[in-house]
Image (cartoon, rainbow, N blue to C red; front, side, top):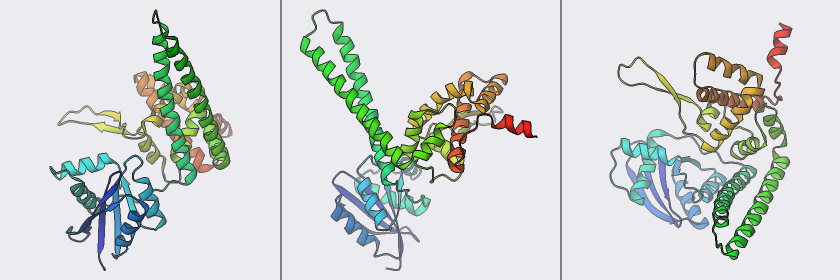
Length: 331
């Protein structure tokens, strides 16, 4: 068909609700559901190819959307995977009250037609595996902390059952071993695929091994970002103004709408960078001299670290902590 369409896909564990709307007028052309299986994915791809041009839009759903996204990518279909918060705000703008799987598919199609979201970036296999390993490590650390707290409490019981103490010790030993294996596997995968990138990231004074591994797991070689401000926004350290009415006071806050884990790591890195990274130390001192609170100064340092890491990775040149002094000596 010589028609351009937006295809909304509401994804559940076992099925895909699909709505197809015309780009020109927004009229609903077709609605159905397919199984969330390889066969169902192929049926959807065949349907999408019936049109002159199609843009498929879905929400990020943890893991349920990943197989479909991979199938669409391999088939060369234009697709977008949007943040659920974006769709929620779009629904509120539309004053939407009905919420069913079919209506969600229509809403996703309408979002694709009106908002034209960016094409989905499909991570290379190594990045996907690193991210999976990182998620596994994070969850096991939470479980280990919970077991440690339980073991601590059990140890203070006057008549604690020996079996509970034995199980606690056994679980902690197993979790320690599992986390160690995962960390070694993660590092081995980085060494095999992103060794040069890791060396560049860790050359930035204040940025350590844990942060470099996390950055590579999420971002690989940073190829999806053109300018450092995009990376700052991804981390959630971008400043946003807060104004109201005729108030002459303008307050700035960070958005906190990016990757919380990366944002926390950069903040922790800033604690070291303010002392040992010469550019960051100068920035920190300037912020304090202006009367800024220490936390605000640290956030400024974290922002600067993101810029330094981005610049180093993109340029391929290792960080030089004495760069400014050398330039001053030359001039």
